[in-house]
Length: 280
Image (cartoon, rainbow, N blue to C red; front, top):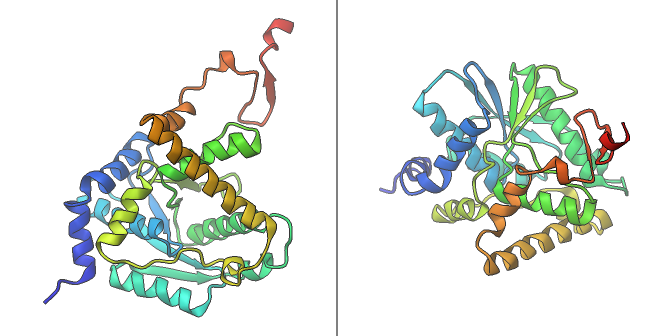
C-alpha cells in the first residue's frame, strides 16, 4: 500500500530535498535572525507552491525542537471561487497542515478599481494578515517569497521604477505595533520548489485573483505580469552567458558603496546627495 502523501513529502524534505530546500531555509532563518525563542509565527498560506512548501519546512524546523516557538498556519480567503478554496483545503489536509481560515471581501473591494488594483490588493491582504495574526497572539507573519522573487524585484525596481531596492528578509510593521514580517524562503530557488512539487505530483493554485480567473483586461495587471516575465527571461539569458549573474544581482544590494552613489534615501525617507558634505 502506498504511503500517505504527507509522509512521503516529509521524508523527501529530510532526505532527497534537504540540501536544496531545508538547508537554505534554515540558513536564511539563522543568517537574517528570522525566528527567535518564544515567537508565535503566522505562516501565511495563499494556496500556491511557495507558501505550501514554506508550511512544510516550518513543520520540519519545529520537529528539530532547537528552541520553543509556535506556529499558526493562516489562510485568508479574499473571495476565492469555491473550487479554489476547496483545492487549498484539500492540499492542506493531504499534507497534514492544520490551517486556520478567515474570510475577507478584498476581491470585491478592488475589482472595480482601474488604477493599480494589484498594488491595492497586496496592501489590503497584508493588512488583514497582520490584523488576524495579531488577534491570534502572533508577533510575526511569514510570507513565501523566494530567491528568484528577490532578484527579479531588484531588476524591476531599477528598470521600471528608477530605484534600487529589494524585498527585505525581515521588516518591522509600521502599522501593527510589535509585529514583524519575515521571508524564510529568501535563499530557496524557485526551480527547486518546482522540482519538489513535481516529484510528488502536487497541484497548487497558480493565481486565484478574480482578474485572472475572468481574464479581466486590466492594463496594470498585465503590465506587471509581462514586465516580471521579461525580467525573468532577461536573467535567464544573462545567466547562460555568465553563471554568476544571479548571485551578483542578489549581492548588489548587499555591497552598496554610498561613496559612489549620487543620492540615497535614509530610513526616514529623507534624500541625501553626494555633494552635501562639500557644501557644508
